[in-house]
Image 1 (cartoon, rainbow, N blue to C red):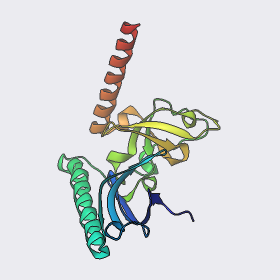
Image 2 (image 1 turned 90 degrees about the vertical axis):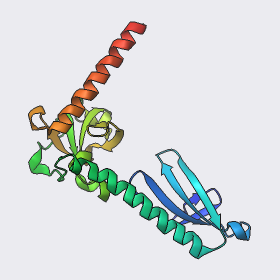
Image 3 (image 1 turned 90 degrees about the horizontal axis):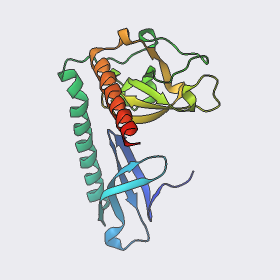
Image 4 (image 1 turned 180 degrees about the vertical axis):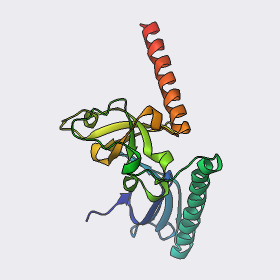
Length: 202
């Protein structure tokens, strides 16, 4: 198995929770006072960015920092995840009985889809992270050789890529919880405004 590297540091411990990953690394060839490091990592399919990097010659000290950062990130994520519940939103994960299963014949373009909970990291396995609008990708078309589906989260508005096999089913407009219907309306309104602006600039 290939070693995971951050520059000259081998990542020997990592944990991803919420929007960031906390990593602990070692460089046996570094100056003694810089042998160990702890950092936050954000990465996509192309590049990994490490920030707030701290180094030490004391493994116990750097491990303590790693634990503290994990604790802080977990609390930050817990607060963010609690917000929908505080707003009275039912965040119970959706199952196949809550939506219409899809087949190879279904066109998912511009459909509201439900992501399988097990595809999401544990802290995100709730309804507010499952309901998306599929905006395109080869996987959205029936009988396509591609599997990528590009989606917009109807709660946060964030864009993400999933595979067609990650999709549990679809929801009709009348099945949408109020927050998802509002998110869909907001996205469609913003999309229309961008389209109108583009036509005006031509």
